[in-house]
Length: 307
Image (tube, rainbow, N blue to C red; front, side, top):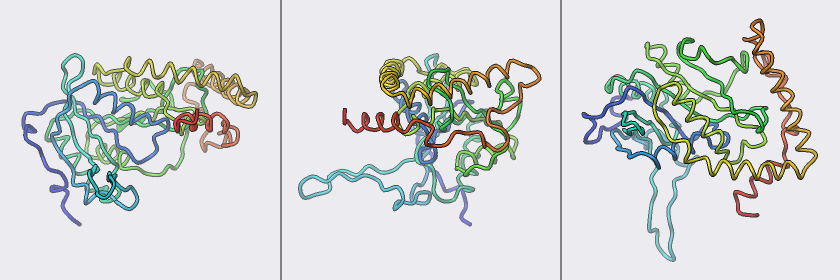
């Protein structure tokens, strides 16, 4: 097995980098509503970013599975956009330094990747690693955005009630990283922001805003949120228009509202505070057909520019 020490290269200025918080946003696994991508885009748009470490993507990526983009003009290739996976230093609105690990999720050498990130955590004296993503959930868009919180220590997410009981899920590099960091005594947590299942294939800015709010609450960082507000408002209006135009979608949303409200009411009862919304095996989740295919088609058409 190859050594993980040469998996990344430090850039100039890395010795002066700082930040006790490292955010992790990897592209390539489940990210309903493009929550992680929108959150990362908002950070890059709001703050200056200095690349302090770059990973060797040739070792980590399967190019045939996720092909980079080349620009072709008339009779020649004119531009190549290489894939990246890098660690950046940023400063929030209050001037507090933090780190952002962003780029494509590795296809290969997950264990070496996790070990390399742990090296960076220790090199820069990071005390908390936080990941974000969006996951499809049987929740309505008409209620406050919620999230499934997970962490290496229960104290880190003590204020979050579980939504799902025991369940086997496909692994991801970010999830393995969190698990391995916990094994070595490092604090890490993540927020899987709940995106209504019927909106999972479209951009849902409201959930991206919530993701940044969850991170701010856990870290104290002053992160951008209002920049997404106008886009979120426009998206919300378009969703409402489509809901009003379809009795089928109205029924789906109404059923999800009832399920959501019953769960939230149960949470207020101290005796039921720990009861997950969907039981131990998730068997109470609605079927895909019940989750508003008509609304999903509408929003997908809007993204393609079909109206």
